[in-house]
Length: 321
Image (cartoon, rainbow, N blue to C red; front, top):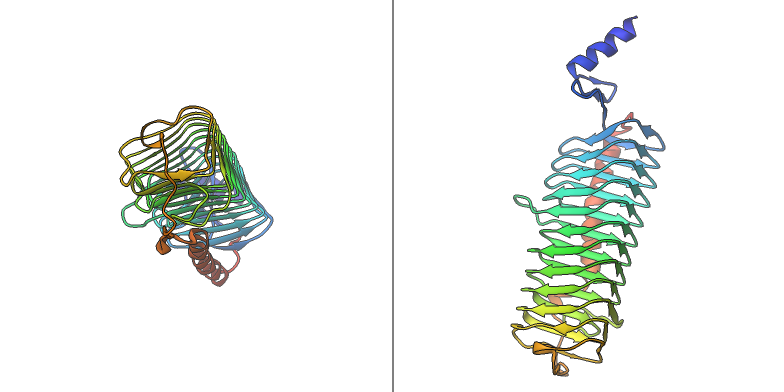
């Protein structure tokens, strides 16, 4: 009788009980995670409080996961059966982990997916101060990937829906397969597509540098791309290089300054506008050093935050989920 009374009081007041909070409105169970935990099942939602760190290994979360401002969640070999929401300066690192819902961020420090499987979409928005990054490495995102700020790198991965990047630092797609359209615009450090397959239309507008295919104008690439639809590049600056691509549709665009360069492309449709008579780039063209090795830069950034998160979680001790 005493236990029933305590549980009833907790459900009414919403107070914490052994790491859990019962929402009075919905009755949904919420677990707060600070520290480390292993192969347990969290029956409801999971929250990492602001500024705290949580590391999980082999953990299953039945509900939604929320990483609050400045918090870190590092999970390996896990199963997340709901959505993941990451707040300002939050960090989410998932290794060999399945996410059944969408991953949504607003000004997050970063999202690092390594051999992960996201059954929903990824949607990243700008925050107040942080320049976020999203790394999708050897992973699968079943639906759309949309970013509105920061650094985006899709490396050795599959995205089933549209990939859209607008107003960020860069969007790079390397050794990956995109099931639908690729739309990249207004990237201050340009955009690279290397050794990849884009099954829908591809559009590049207002970027500070575009490299499609082989060459080294942004980064060294030795592999060709396959584009299943039209490719359009317009109003890009710094340089637009199109080399060694197979384009099933048309290749077109105007307003690129300087004019685009390229060679060894197989275009099954029409090449029009500035792409009607492409000239090869000058032999003296060099890769911009500041844009080199983006993969390693992103991995280093993630590794630093991950190490800090794991250290903080270890110091906090068992999370008692």
